[in-house]
Length: 114
Image 1 (tube, rainbow, N blue to C red):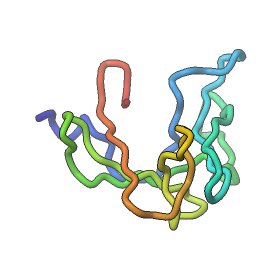
Image 2 (image 1 turned 120 degrees about the horizontal axis):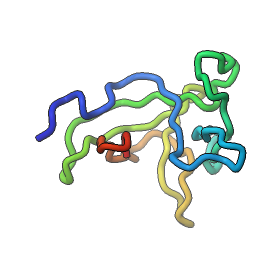
Image 3 (image 1 turned 45 degrees about the horizontal axis):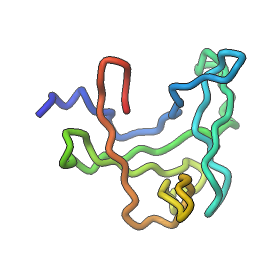
């Protein structure tokens, strides 16, 4: 099993997509409301200058332990409403749903966290 530093620690994060927009900007997962699809929003290159009012792109990441495939199980909650978490919809998109056991496996490889 990999050392603990291979897993992000529980905390508040901007979660970036690996794909950038045509202008080269990073795209962060964005909370849009209860039962709404999670989308991506372009963010400034230097996150230190990202405005505090952009809480819709901040996520509380809570680690619950290892999964069966070598990753680690996490719950993703929007900072703006921690009674919700990211989960799958019936049409295959990721939406926010009431807290209830929707988890993601996250692990690190040579390109970052997956």
